[in-house]
Image (tube, rainbow, N blue to C red; front, side, top):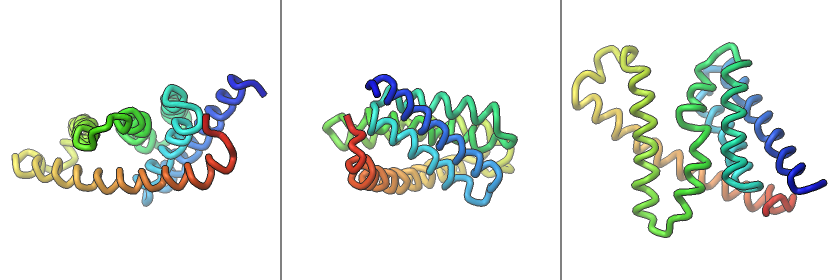
Length: 172
């Protein structure tokens, strides 16, 4: 199999697995955030095994198919607004040597995504977010949860690199 065919095949496989995960998240809303975060692991696998550009392609295809095929749009929207592209951003940002700059950029991306989500959901927050302390609490709590997510995501990626990608020889 040629390199190009292998990359295309892996991209299609990762996109299909991501969309399947988004489908599960859309029909099982109890674990929606966790399952959507899990769907982003397939984007990360594409980044690790075939490169950031292919990871971005997997994100685009998964997002489009999720919006077109899934009956409940909440899961694909959550994927589009944050979880789907974050593995690509993370891979690029973590190439920077300075950890302080890495965290600044990661938090900036998260808070920008949170701002977009906030604009969509501010009517549903029932006035809580209308007060400055409420807005500040949302951003501070969100940033703390994001830091935990990033730590867990990094560990999941490390496990993938050590156990799956390394064993199958998919890394280039």
